[in-house]
Amino acid sequence: MSPVSDDLLVKKSAEGDLGSFKELVIRHEGKVAGVIKSMLGSTEEAGDIGQDVFIRFFESLNKFRGESAVGTYLVRIAINLSLNELKRRKRRFLFFSSEEAGTKVATQENHVDLKEMLEYEFNQLEPDFKAVATLRLIEGYSTEETADLLQIPLGTVLSRLSRAQKKLRNGLQKHLNP
Amino acid sequence: MRNEDHQELFLRSLDSHLQENENILLQNAYLTDTLLSKNSKEFIQIRELLAHQKGQSFGPFFAERVINQIRVLQEEIEYQVFSFFKKYQLVVVGLVVALLISNIMLADTLTIKSIIGLEENSLTDTVTENIQIDLYQNLTK
Image (cartoon, rainbow over all chains, first blue to last red; front, side):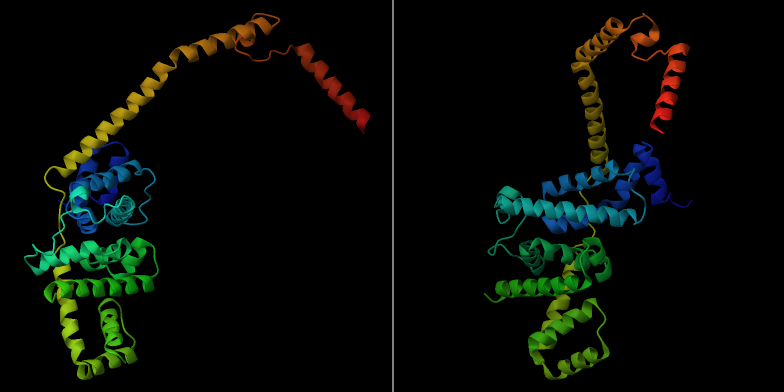
């Protein structure tokens, strides 16, 4: 039996069928979680933002015209809400405060492997760079898709990617060759 | 070209198609720029590590939590609408009664139409109005 299409699930959800909406959540949770956790870290608030993404989607089901795929639509909401959250953190001067923000950030002393160091450096990236790097390097979207999702020119994606990678490499070098 | 330019070209080659002359430039750079080869490996390693961070979830019962949250919100909205009407119930009833009383007081005759505020023209009124309009139009020609 072929699985029910996203479009049909959206239609049923818009009619108030929460079972169909739950199926959509299950299908797209991984994609949304990947984006949000890369942007905000594996924190409790990442889960809250994840819930917000799906609730906003539920609230806009009647407006959803299916011009883009459900996954793309959700990733766009996820990126926007994550960027808002990062800006909010920055405004509150909590961006670098791992304890208050609940962000799991490794310190220089307890780095145990390259992966953790990279995670730490990734968290230090500026939100706009982080968004591009998340979509292209972690989620594997093409540069064109990344530009479309973030609604920025392709050239901007390429330059942000380049700068993000250089920052990551320089950061890692500082840890490896202090 | 400096190593930084070669590096830039290399990074761009990972995310977009280079032009033919840029490709040749990059190939030549691999032969002449000793740092480029080392840097390229590091960048590729970083990208591979990042690519492996993919595929996470929000933990068990996430979908259930979302659905519960939606149910709570729906109940809240229903409750707010209900409370609004309950809160202003007396005011609304009072306004309707006041409107009906004022219509009754102002109306010459006590009919259903006069009570709910609809005009009730007699046949004579309508004919008289039409004659007046015709007369006015003839005079203004």
